[in-house]
Amino acid sequence: MKTRAHVIVSGRVQGVYFRGKTRNEAKKHGVNGWVRNLPDGRVDAMIEGEMDNVEGLIDFMGRGPSYAKVTDLKLEWLEYTGEFRDFRILY
Image (cartoon, rainbow, N blue to C red):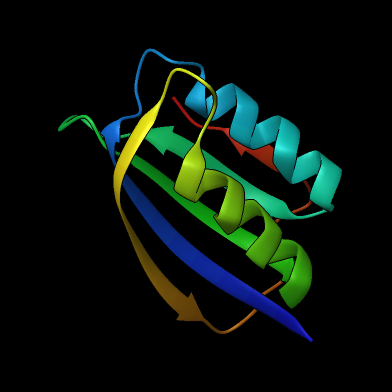
């Protein structure tokens, strides 16, 4: 079953290659969407794909790369739209 998830991650998640590693993990999991930094220091992502694959990326985002320290992850499940063709870092 395909799904869409909006994820906001808090903690030490900027300046630790969080977006780049998230993009790499998204490609491994075969999901599409985007990830970006927010001005308040959090990371924001929209993810679409098969439920198991989306959950796999969310699991990674809950830990982050080695220098990250995730303190909170907000998750909203949405209806799949199929609007994305790849996974990108937005600036």
